[in-house]
Length: 406
Ligand code: ADP
Ligand code: ASP
Ligand code: MG
Image (cartoon, rainbow, N blue to C red):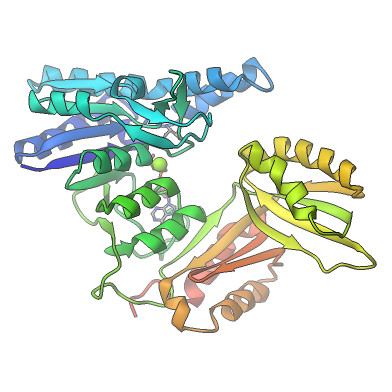
């Protein structure tokens, strides 16, 4: 008998009818002889509603109370599922993060899991319960409720699978697997049967929200096989796993986009050693991640520096950077959130030169201006004007023939 972790996203638990469907899936796994842990998100739209509520209450809601509020959506779905399962004659127990306990650091809104106490769950599983755990939340060492960042239920599920040595972690969602690009914006997207942890991580980090990046990081670290499947059909599925000889070695595995981007430019900075450290240290101290960075060549002792942050961090980042800019004698700070990032991902890129050139030409042929570029061994990203996002994804998908297997 093995242990299986099943995670269901917001659209899979959007109402009681759908929660009954989830119950059937958990029961099927239980009847197959497995121990079952179910991790749930809040009902679709609920976390957004809670965030709007917090923001209507105060311009800068206290972070502790904010996390406490936005984590409540999951309490509703886990108890509803347990009610349904118990009524169907299956023993089920729901647990919030602090009841488990899923210990995290103190970084509200983007906490990282540091340890999971497996005793309570192991005890319940031994009694034959289906254990239902709230995704997206944990508790810090001082008993404050924390949340793991948007899409964080994926990470809760993989972390539980790792901590309890599960056979696999099934991520049930509204699409039947990981595709070459978002199937909701490109009808020619093709489902991948298998994808390596590294490629999936790049895809997730560059915007393919089907899995939260940290869940992939964790799956890779603890070698957890992750299956992305549809809640509404038994067909399809994608296995996220270690790269092996069998895996198709295509030049590219996918195209991604991220509209959650804002660009900040510090103009006319006196160019001397330590400028970048002076600018970025206060941002990292506030836990704001900087993504792409470009520093222009110095002209007559002055330089410009442009970088991107997540849109939700833009206002805070702007305030911090404006203060630093004054300190270092820069002329001004400009912000622009009318941008998006498109990326092409693939391990095959390492042995196929020319991917970058083809990407730039494809965008140029459509009259799409590239504002920033960044590359890694298996990824090339370009920042473009936001209105071109879907067009860029589609023309890149076509240019690299991702609709067909090579
Ligand atoms: P859940 O609520 O189940 O966690 P999400 O909305 O977080 O679901 O993630 C699923 C969505 O991810 C899909 O509906 C799809 O639009 C989007 N998506 C983006 N890129 C991809 C991709 N490459 N493959 C599959 N889905 C993708
Ligand atoms: N409910 C949370 C969110 O909307 C967590 C999740 O869905 O994974 O971000
Ligand atoms: Mg999600």
